[in-house]
Figure: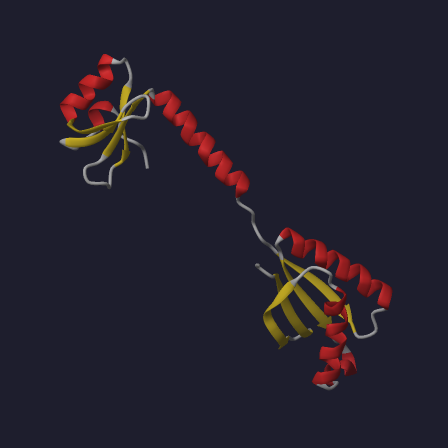
Length: 169
């Protein structure tokens, strides 16, 4: 949405904010534009949806600069979360489980979701669910970061899976 400036503003009355940030109250469009031009500045409509619309007296270039700065700061603060995946097998050794759990802890600290999959092949697909869950729990016990289970144990075509999220305090 583009801001309307000076003669592009259609409202008859505006709530005007001065160049120093002071509230000038509700003025007619003509009065507000005259005040802005008298100071050598622009009249910028900030909030068109308010009643009456809000306008500010300031230099348009400076206004655009501040808006861009706000957008860049918001973009820098936003953090995308990914779903990271860890695969283990029934016979995965303790040292490998430690390494995978350490990596999972790092990812949880960064705020990512983690999908821990117990990959089953051949006959192991037909083992008892209790035994398979116990194998999956071996990794979960090694994770040092606090987490909650987002999606509980679920059978997949590859095997058994559980999804973890960072626990919000």
